[in-house]
Image (cartoon, rainbow, N blue to C red; front, side, top):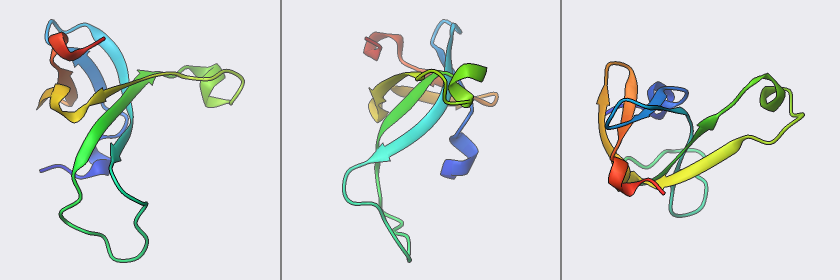
Length: 88
């Protein structure tokens, strides 16, 4: 199991190795947690996209795509591999 901080900003590719962007966020159902974290919180979605300098500076919105967590096939060589069939 990886920590969220280890997944954020990793490269995202499809099964063929095509670059799709970087992990921008992980999402789960329920209200935000404050204080003591819950170990059983389940990630339900992964948000990824291509952020450039203009997005970083807030001059342009990032093109963010959200996929269900089931689209994640594996973590491999410092990147997240998504199942091509689940990408829309």
